[in-house]
Each structure stands twice: as structure tokens, then as C-alpha cells.
Image (cartoon, rainbow, N blue to C red; front, side, top):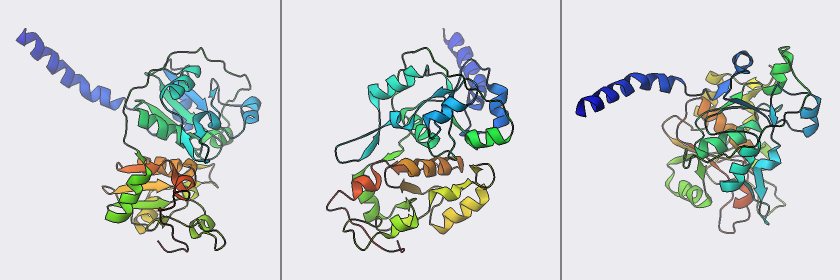
Length: 295
């Protein structure tokens, strides 16, 4: 019995590098996706801005996931990602199984797709990628599209359990302000960051640096991800470095999810998103706010 166990462990060690090599890249390009569209375990998810866009044309075989199906708002207007059984139902309705490789795209430089990426990393789905450039680059490259709606067969999706620890709650952000061990990035507009002199609860979280999310997208070059070296330089200027904890936020978690994806693809491992973001923070009376353009 010991000999059999030894042989089994030896084979497992030999096969382990092969399993690791199959890990899905965080972003794929159109050439890669076009070559894999026929894969049995590949599910392409369309998260373009409007339903009418999907009706006009979409990637061949893509299933439709409206952004609003992924979120819910409480009575105070704070947006949260759906989870638990509701998330399981959403994925099951799309015909997605736990072993599928999900490739998600949109027509906004990854702004919508990044929210699903963040969610699936949190839930522990093993293979999820975002299409670089999304529908925009796919079209500009002259690749095939379809106007035939895809009606997937419903399946039972079982959540893997705990995935990445990529969410920061209000208390963790408050702690980050006090101990200074985490870099805070506000990825909203300049006006939002500075705040309004007429509004009592506006501005940014004290200590947070302004780093607008859209600089991570090269809109002039088919909406693809911006140059990594340039982004790393700008992140360093904002005090964000690999090996240091970073928390990103915006107004509702929408734009911050894109910055989360940006940091992850650049090799940052200790990055979390404050899901409640400013919608929650501004409604918390004892949560401090600072106006102006200095952290």
C-alpha cells in the first residue's frame, strides 16, 4: 500500500506543473479567443452597456448578462454585488458550470466586465478572463459577429466557497486610515475627489490618492488596456507598490472594479475593493471626509 501511495504522489508531482499551466490568463486578446470559440468548456459573456447592442450584434455564441443583474441596491442606495444563491442562480441561468472558462467582455474598455471578474475571483471560480479591447477592438479587427440571441440551457451552479479576499468593508477602510498600512486609491473624477463646497458630505477619504480609472484604458487604440510600464509608473507616483496592501474605491464600486482588474493584471496581489465605496462612506456620520485635491 505504501508503494502505491508513493507512486501516486510521484505522478501527482509530475502532473502539477501541467495543471498550473492551465490557469486562465486575466486578460485574453481577440486572436486567442477566436481560436478557442469552439472549446466545450468556454463560455463567452456579453456585458455591453445596452441590451440593444447585444441584439444588433455580439460575439458568436456569447450569452447576455446585463450589469444590473449582477448588483442590488439597499434602501439607502448603496450598491452591492449579488452573492450566495442569487449569484448562483444568475450564473446557472447563463449555462455556466464550475469547470467552465469564462471570458467576459463589454464595449466600455472593460468597465462592466471587471465587476464580474472581481466577483468571480471572490467566489473562487477557477478560470475567468476579460477580453482586452472588448467588442470595440473585436469589431475594428474585422472579426465575425452574430445577431442571433443565445439561449443557454440552465444548469445548477455551485459556488466554490471562499476565493480571494478582495473586498474591504467600512471598518477595514477606517482601520487603513489609522494605521497607514494600506494605500487608498480614489478612482472617481477630479470633481468628485475634490468635493463640492455646497455639499456637507463630499470629497474623498482622508489619505486617499486620486487615480482616475480611465487612464488604464487606451481609448484611442481600440479601447485596449494601457501600457503596463506607464501604469506602473503612475501607480508608484500614487504610492502604490507591489507587496503593499491597496484598497480602491469609487462611488458605487463600478469604476473601482476596473482598477482592481488593472492592478491584478499588473501583478499586484494584495489589492481589495471597497464595495460600499463613497455611497456608503458618505452616509456614515463618523466617517471622515476631506475636500480639495490633496490626500
